[in-house]
Length: 247
Image (cartoon, rainbow, N blue to C red):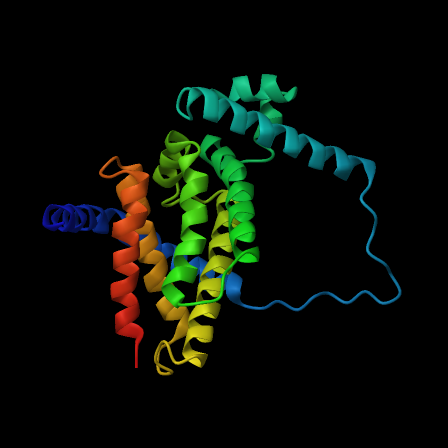
C-alpha cells in the first residue's frame, strides 16, 4: 500500500503542471455558462417545427457520430483519418467539419453522448445511504464506460485540455451539470449531518471531481488497473476527503 501511495504522489506531482492551466481556463468558462440567460419572448408565435433541412442536418450528425465511434473504437483515434469517417458515414469529408472544428472535436462529439448516458443511468439508480457509497456508485458507472474502450478514453483525456471546439464546449457544459449534481449530494449530506453545514457544496464538488479525475488519469496512463483505480485508490481518497467535510 505504501508503494501505491508513492505512485499516486508522483502521478499527481507530474501531472499538476500539465493540468493546472486546463482547470483554470475551464473554471472561467464554466462560470460563464452557469450564468442564467433570459429566454426571448415571442408573443403569439409557437416554436417553429423542424424543417427538412434541419432534419437532414440532425441525421447527418448522427451518422458522423456513429461512424466516428465505430472507427475510433476499432482502429484507434490516431489511426483513423477523417476521410475514412466520411466514407463510413456516406458524406463528403468537408461535411464532417461542419459538425466539428477538427478531428479531436469529433472525438468530443462521440464521447459527449456516452458520458451523458452513463451519468443519467447511474443517477437514475442512485441509492440512499452514506455519501461515499453514493459517490462510488456514480463514478463506477463512468469508469465502466471508459473501460469499454480504454484507448479511446485515453485519447479523449489527452485532447481535452485547451480544446476550443463546439463539441468540447458541450462536454464542458456536461461537466458543469455533473459538478452541480455532486454539489446536490453534498447538500443532502449536510441535511443529514454527515458533513458540516459550513462547507460550500460546489467547492466540495470540485474537490471530489479532482480526486476522481486523478484516479482516472492513473488508470488511463497505465499506472494501475481499472479495479485498483476504483478501489482502493478512488474510494480511499474520497473517504479521506469526506472526513474533512465532517462537523
